[in-house]
Image (cartoon, rainbow, N blue to C red; front, side, top):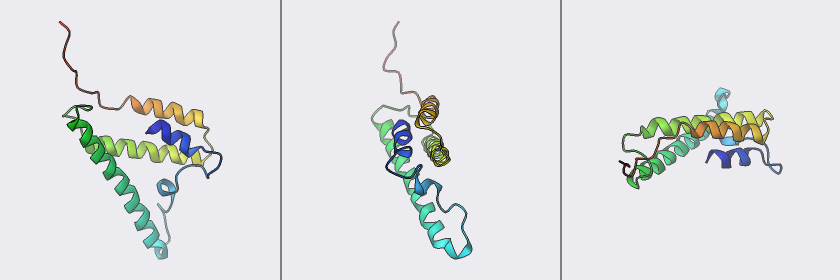
Length: 116
């Protein structure tokens, strides 16, 4: 997810970053509908990540005690930050390094047995 985002945010054939992640966080009062629409899209994206992480617990890819909401919020913030950096001109290599660091926060999968 994070490495794909780094590549997508720095494509040569599109504007850098993500419009939904970076647009309309500050709006004039007459643009409240746009701000609310984009806020809703960001919230929906995070909710989709929560749903996917819950499926990861069910399938045994994530530990049952993982804080799914906090994990989804963390990666949502990480992706928005990467988008802002891309928008400011950060190269793909820099975003890939950040993505790699972000993976260290990923909840460890449950151990599938122990070696005695």
